[in-house]
Length: 146
Length: 77
Image (cartoon, rainbow over all chains, first blue to last red; front, side, top):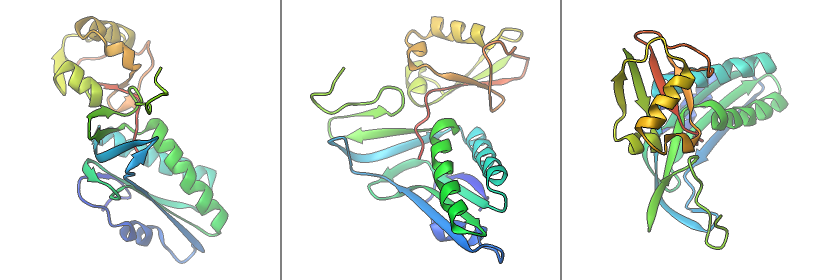
């Protein structure tokens, strides 16, 4: 594994937690983001993720550097899966270790927010009656169109 | 030559994931205009442009051999 990677196989989160653990760490936060079945009343059958892989991995590394600057002593590993994912599959894992728990919690949330801002990865939702790339034009539930 | 990359909805709109274009010396703004002219609807997705895997400014100039990617609003996580 790499500390910051885009993968096409199922993610084992423990690998990333183990990677960031070291003697000076008093806390490890492990976030896993999963494929959700229902979004705003619309049922998802499965998701398809696509990435600009070399740039996505660079941007994940950048997030890691930002975290090490903001929370000195933190160590980060992030993986995002691409391809077809089923309900409850892990799409993303973020592991952060730090000497004390507050930094590990805060840095972990910072990482997912930054992923949603700068990392070139796209999600397509496939429903019973159609499909759409999310981010381009969000589907709204019936009655909330426009 | 410049290698252009299209992803997600833009890949489906253009019908291709990449192509070559003779745009060396042009700016990112020129590139967007060129692509929007060739692929109507491309600008509606408010894509950003990355050059050689880094987000670029509208005034950045393309050089021969560059990789330019249209980055639609991202939706990872």
